[in-house]
Image (tube, rainbow over all chains, first blue to last red; front, side, top):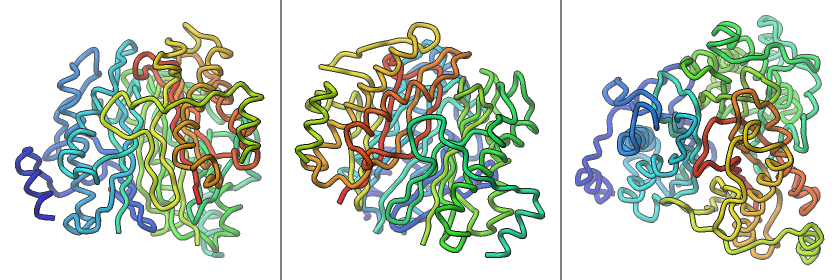
Length: 153
Length: 153
Length: 153
């Protein structure tokens, strides 16, 4: 499992204490061996890295960077449930919501910022099913929100 | 299990015969021990309690009241599968969609109307993972729609 | 299982080699006995059958036809995991996203194009829970996107 932490270091991925939910729910919940992780915003140290809509306020590279931070936040929660990664069997599913102008259609590229990081960090275990969706508004004017399902031992 | 019904009564929660789906699908379906409940609108006695968009036609308090009705409808379906609550192990996940003006960003507060009611009624068993999302349009011009996953015995 | 293929033929359903994901993810992934299928667009032979928004560029019948193609693409992926349908126990859940004008509220009717086809092809095994959601933008300007969960043996 050391390997996973090494790859994170190389990729500049810094996990942190999971952010407190901004409302009345849990960051993650495990049932049988499926872990459901709540929708994560691109917050770092309690601040949103970006706000605004793709195709209006932000470009694709900024959106990918925001998606990357969303998935880092998912990984912080995952680590707590997977006990230093030893229990992680597979990332199963992402749903990525991209706050979009009405004529912005590159949601798949934006959410790749998250999908590619997962695969770099976890290798085969990081490959997953996914949906990428555009929406007109997200909590706190965040540019994206990502929720995740993972399989644990 | 009596306790759950008592708390509902105190909170003014009235379950009803689950509404017929407005299209070709089931209200809920159980697999292994996971129950998937279809997206519920804020209908009561066959009528939507509210229509319109948050931040344009409705304020946060109205949205929370609508979210509360969505989750009451989820609970009506849950009860049928959980046999008077005896089979309920845990609420697992909500996805809450809020019909929003383009500059409305308080989706988390709106969906709290549902999350907080679940916790008041079910206590620890009512705590869940969640995603709150803004969207530009929902079926029948409903202000919100909530789907739920629960773990049964 | 021959029966399923017969019904598909009668309904003019032609499955194909699943489309390559347009980004860094898997078409479907199985865990325990749940199969999660990635969000599918209405592509056929590598081309979108329709682009545009419901209530603006497309009418309900066109949206239903697009939803039908999304679910055919889900079925193509399902077939690979269900080994010629022998392993299929039940379709569990659809989430259908409909790219909508701000005042289009017939998402349920649009997604019926998918739900009804599933039931015609698979009978009781095709009945499912579902959420139908409107959104302002989808990848590649697609009119709808559908993701699916199925239970396998």
